[in-house]
Image 1 (cartoon, one colour):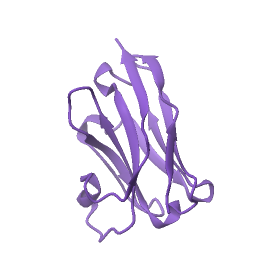
Image 2: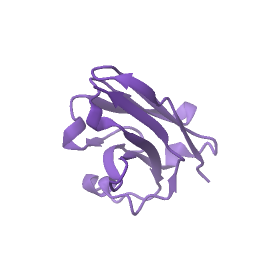
Image 3: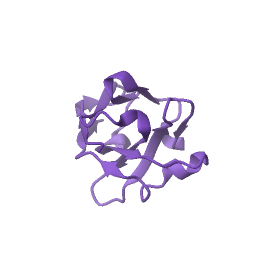
Image 4: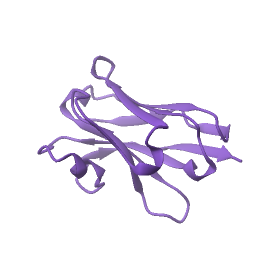
Length: 128
Protein backbone atom coordinates (compact mmCIF):
# COMPACT_ATOMS: atom_id res chain seq x y z
CA UNK A 1 0.00 0.00 0.00
CA UNK A 2 1.32 3.41 -0.93
CA UNK A 3 2.24 5.67 2.00
CA UNK A 4 3.18 9.22 1.14
CA UNK A 5 5.29 11.75 2.97
CA UNK A 6 5.98 15.23 1.59
CA UNK A 7 8.92 17.45 2.41
CA UNK A 8 10.67 20.53 1.15
CA UNK A 9 8.24 23.26 2.06
CA UNK A 10 9.28 26.49 3.71
CA UNK A 11 9.17 30.26 3.77
CA UNK A 12 10.62 31.97 0.71
CA UNK A 13 10.43 35.33 -1.01
CA UNK A 14 8.59 36.11 -4.20
CA UNK A 15 10.64 34.96 -7.18
CA UNK A 16 12.48 32.23 -5.28
CA UNK A 17 12.40 28.51 -5.97
CA UNK A 18 11.55 25.43 -3.92
CA UNK A 19 11.55 21.74 -4.69
CA UNK A 20 9.02 19.57 -2.93
CA UNK A 21 9.52 15.84 -2.61
CA UNK A 22 7.01 13.11 -1.93
CA UNK A 23 8.31 9.70 -0.93
CA UNK A 24 6.30 6.49 -0.92
CA UNK A 25 7.52 4.40 2.00
CA UNK A 26 5.43 1.51 0.72
CA UNK A 27 7.60 1.34 -2.41
CA UNK A 28 4.59 1.01 -4.69
CA UNK A 29 4.83 4.33 -6.50
CA UNK A 30 5.52 2.91 -9.94
CA UNK A 31 1.97 1.50 -9.91
CA UNK A 32 0.41 4.92 -9.40
CA UNK A 33 -0.12 8.14 -11.23
CA UNK A 34 0.92 10.96 -8.93
CA UNK A 35 -0.67 14.33 -8.38
CA UNK A 36 0.14 17.50 -6.50
CA UNK A 37 -2.63 19.57 -4.98
CA UNK A 38 -2.61 22.63 -2.74
CA UNK A 39 -4.95 24.25 -0.27
CA UNK A 40 -4.75 27.84 0.87
CA UNK A 41 -6.50 29.04 4.05
CA UNK A 42 -10.22 29.37 3.52
CA UNK A 43 -10.08 27.86 0.04
CA UNK A 44 -10.84 24.49 -1.45
CA UNK A 45 -8.10 22.07 -2.39
CA UNK A 46 -7.00 22.73 -5.95
CA UNK A 47 -5.09 20.76 -8.52
CA UNK A 48 -1.51 21.79 -9.28
CA UNK A 49 -0.16 19.08 -11.54
CA UNK A 50 0.08 15.37 -12.19
CA UNK A 51 2.36 12.81 -13.80
CA UNK A 52 1.53 9.41 -15.17
CA UNK A 53 3.05 6.09 -14.14
CA UNK A 54 6.28 6.25 -16.03
CA UNK A 55 6.31 10.01 -16.59
CA UNK A 56 4.87 9.60 -20.09
CA UNK A 57 2.53 12.55 -19.58
CA UNK A 58 2.23 15.56 -17.31
CA UNK A 59 -0.62 17.96 -16.70
CA UNK A 60 -0.57 21.35 -14.99
CA UNK A 61 -3.09 23.91 -13.93
CA UNK A 62 -2.80 27.10 -15.95
CA UNK A 63 -1.54 29.25 -13.09
CA UNK A 64 1.66 27.21 -12.70
CA UNK A 65 2.46 26.34 -16.31
CA UNK A 66 5.97 27.41 -17.19
CA UNK A 67 6.92 27.82 -13.53
CA UNK A 68 6.35 24.40 -11.95
CA UNK A 69 7.66 21.05 -13.13
CA UNK A 70 6.67 17.60 -11.93
CA UNK A 71 9.07 14.70 -12.22
CA UNK A 72 9.39 11.28 -10.70
CA UNK A 73 12.04 8.70 -9.94
CA UNK A 74 10.32 5.36 -9.55
CA UNK A 75 13.55 3.68 -8.44
CA UNK A 76 13.54 6.03 -5.47
CA UNK A 77 9.74 5.95 -5.07
CA UNK A 78 9.79 9.73 -5.15
CA UNK A 79 7.88 12.39 -7.03
CA UNK A 80 9.07 15.98 -7.16
CA UNK A 81 7.51 19.36 -7.66
CA UNK A 82 10.04 21.95 -8.77
CA UNK A 83 8.56 25.39 -8.19
CA UNK A 84 10.26 28.39 -9.77
CA UNK A 85 9.38 32.08 -9.79
CA UNK A 86 7.14 31.63 -6.78
CA UNK A 87 4.42 34.15 -6.10
CA UNK A 88 2.55 35.04 -2.91
CA UNK A 89 -0.57 33.42 -4.37
CA UNK A 90 1.30 30.09 -4.40
CA UNK A 91 1.16 30.10 -0.59
CA UNK A 92 -0.65 26.96 0.53
CA UNK A 93 -0.26 23.54 2.02
CA UNK A 94 0.90 21.24 -0.76
CA UNK A 95 -0.21 17.62 -0.88
CA UNK A 96 0.89 14.76 -3.02
CA UNK A 97 -1.58 12.03 -3.94
CA UNK A 98 -1.50 8.65 -5.63
CA UNK A 99 -3.99 7.24 -8.09
CA UNK A 100 -3.81 3.55 -8.99
CA UNK A 101 -6.28 3.27 -11.83
CA UNK A 102 -6.07 5.73 -14.71
CA UNK A 103 -8.11 5.07 -17.81
CA UNK A 104 -6.15 7.36 -20.10
CA UNK A 105 -8.00 10.67 -19.95
CA UNK A 106 -5.39 13.14 -18.75
CA UNK A 107 -7.89 15.60 -17.31
CA UNK A 108 -9.12 12.89 -14.93
CA UNK A 109 -5.89 13.39 -13.01
CA UNK A 110 -7.00 16.90 -12.07
CA UNK A 111 -9.92 15.63 -9.97
CA UNK A 112 -9.02 15.04 -6.30
CA UNK A 113 -11.82 12.59 -5.60
CA UNK A 114 -10.49 9.47 -7.32
CA UNK A 115 -7.04 9.56 -5.70
CA UNK A 116 -6.36 6.57 -3.45
CA UNK A 117 -3.87 7.96 -0.98
CA UNK A 118 -2.67 11.34 0.25
CA UNK A 119 0.29 12.67 2.13
CA UNK A 120 0.00 14.90 5.18
CA UNK A 121 1.04 18.05 3.34
CA UNK A 122 3.90 20.50 3.51
CA UNK A 123 3.52 24.26 3.99
CA UNK A 124 4.80 26.66 1.36
CA UNK A 125 4.72 30.35 2.22
CA UNK A 126 5.80 32.99 -0.28
CA UNK A 127 6.30 36.49 1.03
CA UNK A 128 6.03 39.54 -1.20
